[in-house]
Length: 332
Length: 253
Image (tube, rainbow over all chains, first blue to last red; front, side, top):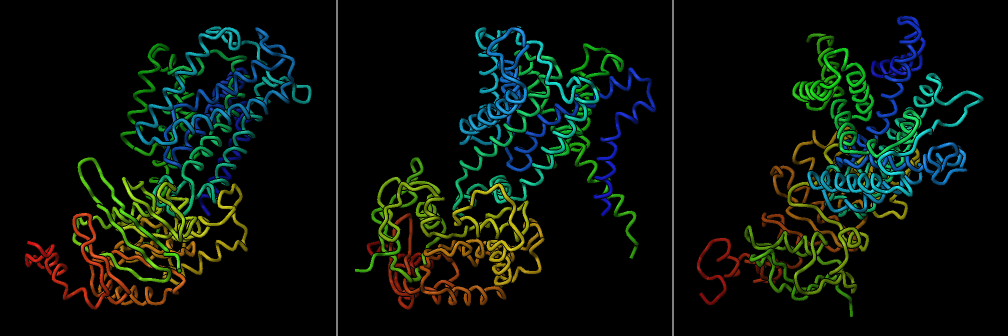
């Protein structure tokens, strides 16, 4: 009951956040927080959610999720009108975005198929290898990806006559997308597919002995994660007004893992909590210490959180709640 | 002529230099109860794993109801009618008892791959509840498996193996770790199995294995050394040599 109330308050705060910021901050700062901190945290939280889904319910740590998100971003950038340079062009956002989601899902399935026989550190390495292979290919291919310069001016569609990149429009669209994907993950993990996925996490031999194809479920899980990452990739590309190979380089690839671990891999909410913490430090590193020391700062935050709570902020929250619950419980 | 439920012909399994199973051949007829005995390291579990498809045999053929399954994957063999338990319980610790049974029931359903949550009147869920009831786990359906006692885990193991209504049930030491009080219940369950289910049982406990079996296969060093009815096992000199070390093993020493 208490956790339901907790969730409702959290959802309400997220919906009201842009207005609450306007109350406590000057307008320009409130706008900055809405778009550049909260909006960005939600978008990268979606990409981290794709990793959290795989890790929490399948036990698969994939380092290819940023690349998969980038494949959707590139698909949009290649297809839409107005992007610079024009690679294909002529496709409206309403069509380009679903195509991008299909591309990301297929890319997820491909990564899942390539890595289907590996686990643990080997899975980590093979997904990293695939991601870095795609990164290098994109960086050196001019005809389709415009090489290291990437594709600019991907501004997003007009929504009811309003610019997609309006901070409020972007924030609420991202929030709705994140809520749908988050709810979708929570729904999916109670379906036969989700339960079998958790079975694979706990014991894949037994899953096979019950008549399920472990490979099929694993590849499908990577496809689902690809879809989630793709949604984040499309939003991230519009947020950045374009995409370049740096978006899917080693740094951003590892950042997604850091977000997920900081937030905690025990629950999909950890992806968003981790992303928010990461984004705050990324944005205000210059104010806190020195812009160039961002990696030191986030590394320290990572170390402290992992040392204090190996299961991240979600684990810390769970322990605090059970501690409070135990204190409040009537003494015998 | 009746087709054997399971037919092994010269099945061998090698791990590097270790010959874990060597030239094993026997037929198990439909409805038969066969116990596989032998000391630790005799190759019993390796033989089980080879039959169930955890790994392919290094040599030999395996037929299930006349169909060659030597190259089939584990899940394909399960779909052909094999249900099994493991020596050490292999369960889904992060899921509830009901979810474990639900997955087990759905494993052999045509719509096993589904992105839709089960409805309230879902038949697989109803069967999972019936199984929980049958194996004394009804009060624990919402409990995560990680919190179960050893005896409860063994019960759940067998419940999951039976969930898909297997034609060939293979139990790997089902009495291992059970309290003396739980053993009669296990024996009663084995006796209550319908003859439409063929049973192969690895068991160290003679009080379970011999009353449950029609025929006993004894293995040593990866080979079958004795095959006899249960009433001729305890006084068999080779079996006595294996278990008591009387020096008669192999008959030629």
